[in-house]
Amino acid sequence: MNVIDKSRASRWPALASWEGFLLLILLCVFFYGAVAVPGFLSAFNLTQAAAGMAEKALLVLPMVLLIIAREIDLSVASILALCSVVLGVLIRAEVALPIAMAAALGVGAVAGAFNGWLVTALSLPSLVVTLGTMALFRGISYMILGTDSVNQLPDALSAFGTDNTLGNALPWVIVPFLVLAPIFAVVLQRMPLGRRIYAIGGSPDAAVYSGIPVNRLRFGMFVLSGLVCAVASVVLTARLSNARANNGLGFELDVITIALLGGVNVFGGQGKMTGVFLALLLVTALRNLLGLQQIGGDAQGVAIGALLIFSLLLNNSVGKLVGSRPHRWLANKLAVVTGGAAELGTATKGTDRTS
Image (cartoon, rainbow, N blue to C red; front, side, top):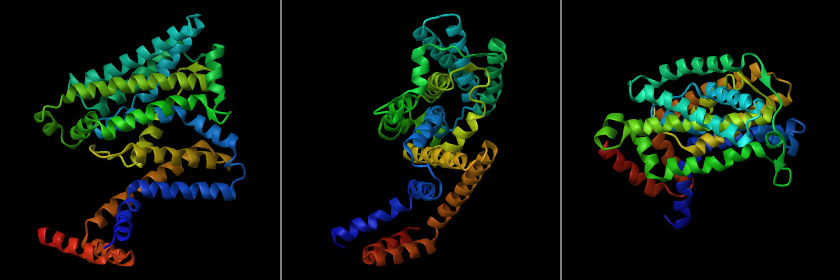
């Protein structure tokens, strides 16, 4: 097989990957929107769509790490609301904006540390712990501010929530995500810390015997989750121009949906940030497309949920098909089309002899 044939054959795994499937669906959605929905590809609409997903995009970053490590944080939206309330109350008390933001970050870190302590020190399951703290943190928010809201924000914070940059094409509220996303991706997929997180998700007991500080890493991930929630609270408060106790209500479901749709294994040990980023774009595009067609939020939730169930079923079916002999026969036939039958046939025979 010559060099061209080898490169052509090597494209099949990439095209058949979960990321390739998400990219194909995303392109179909954008094509439909460009053809059938007026204004979908306008600069104003794309800017608004990006701004509307800024907080969820931030929240999904630590959620991916936690799920890969066989943990979960259902309290992310409640931590966001608590930090937003603290920020708003301090601003109303005429505390300087940098101090108020620092306090919100501190509250987020403490909330995340509380989750991490319950999980690591008391060996409680994170699903149960964060289900409880989801109600706890939201309840504290109502105890602090009640049903009131803080609407008078400093000009700098209001401008951050409404203004754009890069020639009026990029909302400021999406900038924190654009800064943090590459860092999370590099750490997870290119650094030893990321390999340790995968190892914890693959087998926590084996990770312990390998010398990985499992509890320390889990605790750190929960603290990181709280900090990112605090950053998202600043973004949401600025974008909505108010702080109140019900901010971010229901965000945790969308965040988990994006993570799972992006290919993160719910049982841990598998997942890539690249797939999650594609899933984030897909969910954003779908919600925006449905919104432009006057379809409400409940119906949008049904559509996103149906997409998640369909994708998980498809992923499971493809996974079973990949391991079957008919699939290897089909791959052999595809290689014939691309000019690579001889080498792939030899590899398949070798696989059959060792299986």
